[in-house]
Amino acid sequence: MANEPSERRRLVRAAMAAPYLERDEERDLAERWRQHHDEVALHRLTASHMRLVIAIAAKFRRFGLSPADLIQEGHVGLLEAAARFEPEREVRFSTYAAWWIRAAIQDYVLRNWSIVRGGTSSAQKALFFNLRRLRARLLQEHGAEDEQTVLAEIAETLHVSVADVQLMTARLSGPDSSLNAPLHEEDGSGERQDVLVSDAPAIDDTVTGFIDGERRHNWLVEALRVLDDRELRIVRERRLEDESETLEAIGARLGISKERVRQIEARALEKLRSALLARNDRTAYV
Image 1 (cartoon, rainbow, N blue to C red):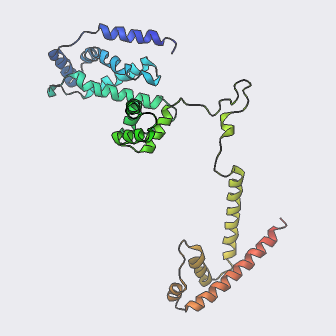
Image 2 (tube, helix red, strand yellow; image 1 turned 30 degrees about the vertical axis):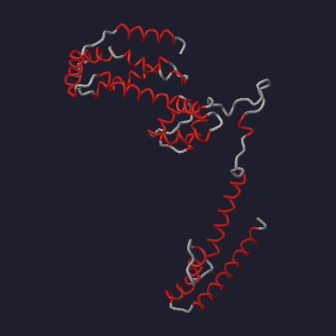
């Protein structure tokens, strides 16, 4: 936003101007809000803790997001803490609110740091927010040449796989890059997506395969109509099911020998072959 610095200064000045609360006063305000939904009490309680929001938001500046937006998200977490706070537990509100403020800011960072959404499990969040710090410390201890040991220790510490650590390291190593960005800055010709290699078949091959497969399916359905019920049953169970039945099993159900089943199957397949050849002869001139 254009007035980002002035907005941040306004938030900081307002936070610094709010008075500190004594324990008894803090508890009284929390009880008034919890029991009577006193919005004046809520405003005084949250305003006095905006310093905490600003302090926690400042720890997330390295992610390159708007400081004012981080503070606003922290304020959302502060309001959530006020809604859930139980003053009778004799815990200071700042201690309780810090977790909610940090959680709200972390969720905002994860949603907005990259257009590619990362994992949202607790382990993935811990990896995202602690990887750089852990990596820097372990590289100091082991040296840059012992990369695999560093990755393994990070994975063990944060309870994730080494592959997850490698993937997150790659994500944090640089900003998002548009596939439509020009390859050659000087003349703007070409785009990054033009040099991407895909293992998938070409779209025209995929469509052709789909059309041909549908055509062959229709031919087979039409050809099956030349079979009588027993032939059709044997062909289905022997050739068209996922798991082919044995000659013995089919013969036992039909009350005939397996040799007779084999003969019927052979005759049915010949009838199908003749029907398909006749069908192809008719369509060859279409």
